[in-house]
Amino acid sequence: MKNVYAIQLSNWPPSCVLPQAIGTIWSYAYQHEDICQNYQMKRVFWENQTPETIINEIIDPDVLMCSCYTWNWAETNQVIIEVKQKYPNCLVIIGGPEPKYNMQWMQENPAVDILIPYYGEQVFTDVLVANLNNNFNDVNGIITKDKQSTGNINFDFSNIPSPYLNGFFDWLLKNKIQSTKQIRCVFESNRGCPFSCTFCDIGAMAYQKIKRFDIQRCKDELEWMVKNNIVAIDVADANFGIFDVDEEFVDHLITLKKKYKWNGRFLPTFAKVKGDNILKIANKIIENELDSIFGISLQSVNPNVLKAIKRKNPFTLDEMTNIILDMNSKGTAVYTELVFPLPNDTKKEFINGLEKLIDMPQPFNKFQINQTNILTNSELNDNEYIEKFGLTWKSIKGFTRHYYGNNIVDKVATSTSTISEDEVWDCIFMSKCFYIPLYYYGIARTLCDDLHPTLKRSKVLEKIYNHLCNVPWFLEFYKKMRQHYFNSINNREHFGHIITTDKSQYWPEYAVAHRTYIDNDIFSEIKKVFPQHTDIINFDQNSIWTGNSIDRIVEKNNKKYHILDDRNYDYEDYLMNVYIIGRFNDTYKVKQVKEIND
Image 1 (cartoon, rainbow, N blue to C red):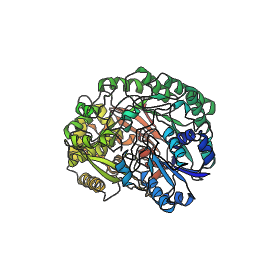
Image 2 (cartoon, rainbow, N blue to C red):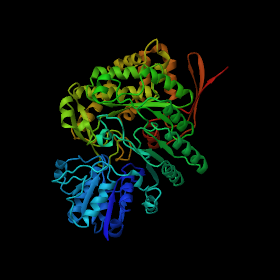
Image 3 (cartoon, one colour):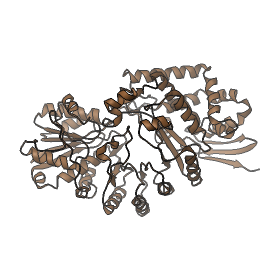
């Protein structure tokens, strides 16, 4: 029997994600008589293991199959290189979105024998069968150092077994390492996306036809996830809510939650189309505590940018205001995120976009900025597209979205033909280091809301910012953050900030900014700008939970409020709960603010 080892590393401590790609691909292939009679799966590495550990545990491999992503490529590649050196006859087969789907990439990575682009189930099966005779000439859908054949993705999806239901994932859980405590998994009811956003690799023509899995299979998978106490279900469907059956899946999960007393989360990416169905599903998810917030990613509010990236947002900002008001009235928070910089972005238009968002009659409850990172096989990484829009990409140590320090390498956009590196930094500082901590993390939220619309929220923040530009500690903070950013994009420093004893945990800009502002008593500076509103500023200051219990009375606008919170956290746990776990909720707020009626 030939020994097969598989790698799909999670790299998301403290959680581990069951390897969906490896699970479906191996399960499909193992149905073939020649494969089940000649190959055996010896080990799957899917947890937060180090390359050194994996290399030592791979013994006499005949096949090494790897599913490669931005967050696991550096460590996976290290394993591939060393295994190939130790076992030169081992056939190394890789897939996933990280490798570039061409022969040049293969030639630059000599330890890899075969690259399978797009869907891998049928092609991987064909490769293993061909490997029995060591002849791959007739295999379609593979890329080698001297061959790139046409893809083979038009196979019958109904023949793909579920790794949740056929025992494959049961085997992995039974043999998981002792340090693995929390398990996440991927729910996939369909594959493909009809849209062509240039920043997304699912926009490729090969993925544009949506193919759906059997409804009962999907329901049975959800039951497996709940019964196995999965802490979070990441929905792989690119447009959840686009089909009526998606509501049926949510209803089924709600029933399972009650039946098994499950406390996990269900995390979909909603469809980029209008529809009451999406809002209805979102409300059900929140009301039944399957998630705590409803997200609609705008990516940009600049029409010129949206045109360049081939995206159309499903709602106008006026429509979003009504949605936020409706969702908030039901206790559901709403967040959005932007990607920056993108083609046709300018500093002026980006800042204008921030102001439009914060000056909405009802702003988003939470807001996030993601620096544009490259997905290898997206149109954004096409040479003609890069040249057309003057995109500059730089490799960094770290991952700008999640800030883990486990040797992750990311590639981010640092300028375009319409915005310079310095202007990109100015926009990142204004959004991540000022708007987010001051408004979306509460430092001046009540002040902004109470003065709006007489004085727009953006104008309140502008006045505060202009004042801070003359305050020494703020200027020093700006200088420090700017130096770190440019050191990071020029690969002289790891991206992200270390503020705890865990040196592998790198913290985002808004966390560092929020702590800096509080530690330097920014509230006293805000009072200098708005001395007539010290009561509101005091209210904001006392409404932010700082990790310790609080019980006090504060006044605002001639009214008294009882502020109460019984939480007492150690400092590092507090930081994790507020800035990482709580980045999409209101953990930063005190638990109770109640008006006192005399």
